[in-house]
Length: 263
Ligand SMILES: [Zn+2]
Image 1 (cartoon, rainbow, N blue to C red):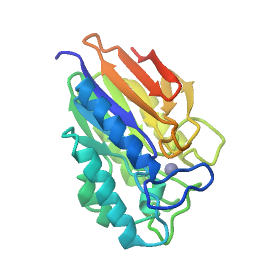
Image 2: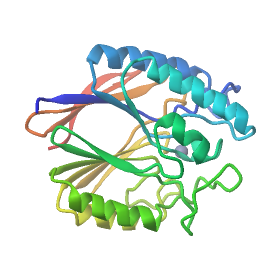
Image 3: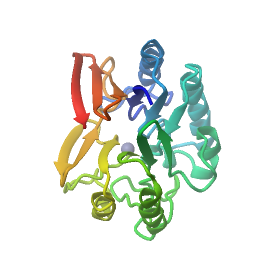
Image 4: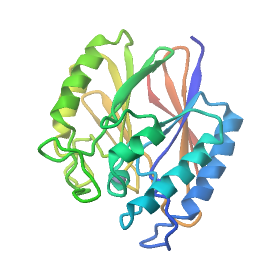
């Protein structure tokens, strides 16, 4: 298959709320409109939002309105989008209510798909220590887990794929990092990824300043949040070349840089 590219952005946290703590909830959707024009121009095959599309913890009905509004902006691009679920999503509205809007079967927001020579995996990091999915009533942003059911699924999914290259999308960080933004049982996920015998790269959101690390041959990249700042922004266009090499065009308010993120 020929080279293809996809667009990635993180943490829109859209809501019709006043800015707070350097988070510009309403301006974030205007940034998304700009992103969409760029993604269209670049003719990307698909989009990934890395979680936290909305942020409205006070009122679930209002949260669902914001979710519909933000989703429509993305859908208007005509480019299919994969919606990773984030803690502010499940802290705003229950998963069974958000899932249909974002193409997930109710009760489950993890899965995988193939494009060209790549296997893409989407994880849901919004479970508690007992494997219960968070709701607006229970959610704790600094206590994210990947459920046992999901870990078993991941292991089986990676054993099944005939692709040698895997890209994982998750909201909270899977890095080996002592930080509340990291998934509490991230080591369990890393051990599955490290032992699957594929070349794995991970893209994440959640930690607004962005971050990256490398451990045991796997690179973990966290994109800066869209909601941060009145006019700051960041999106990536990742091109998977014929050779399998992945090149990210990183576009921010400070300029554009290109770097190889996986070979
Ligand atoms: Zn988050």
